Image (cartoon, rainbow, N blue to C red; front, side, top):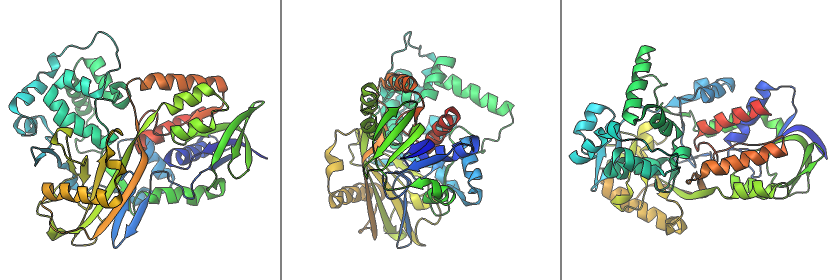
Length: 456
């Protein structure tokens, strides 16, 4: 049995970021990372075929998080960063079978046809809506209905939620899924008042409204796709990484932990970082803490399929002048939305070709995710064809399935986290990081991994 200071279990972005930050912050520690699969990256992965570039999982991160940009700089990837093209600012929502541009300014909102006049007036009434007297963990949909009305909740908030979480807004916790907006209501009593106050503060600091530190940031990837980031981690830290090493259990021995792997190998460590999905972490800690295992296993995941199509540009009637579009549930379509990948990132499709990335799935109640690849391809072709005016069949097709796609922060998620953190504290020297806890994006994973590295 070998002994090390820190063992990290999981070689996705969370585990790899933890490894990097530990090296930066605590270079005296001996660290090993073990990944169950044969390759690193978790849900991050880039594939190439016929001149097209596909992302199996996320297709980028927003450049608003300083820690992620710092990480890229420290890895020597600054010159490989690629931000979305300028026309990515145009975003669309499907309503009554037609794509309508999402208004990105107050003046454009007043004239937009995404909402009816009545719906727009209800949104403008938002500053006069009173705040709840108690702190009930309400759903995102309930919060939106209360603050901006039913129509805006259905046609603005719901599709945005589906685009981020792949789920319905009525089962997601507002506090856990969008804590910043919940804080805006608590601090200012109104989302509109909070937005105005933040704009004034930004202007007072002299920030340019086109700067990447604006609230949304710009979607960012790398030359060659997100796998560039994973490959760089492996290039730098490969000697401390072992793949094909699935952990089976963790037990406590004196002040240390013993990790047993499926291949018979055992590892002893003073500290352990669980950087794997919550349901996997639940299995290996079951002998260590039944309460911790139960809390981890109570976090559910949304099953998703990502369907990518490559077409000749002339096969598409509609001008692809934006990021893509989202589909409200009330439109009764099979897809959640589609990103016009070749319009936002150069080099993702051959010249004269276009690439679409379409998401199918929900909170698990739909049988769509259980369809065959051929069936998924057919239903996506129908929806895209009708919405965008596409003729003929795609010349390139890819289907990526995720049985456990995106963690679902249901109402009560904060209580689960409190239970998990309490158990971890009582065990001592065991930590968690990943997208199952305090944010599902790459930035969220990087931030949580940095906090873990500071705590070890």
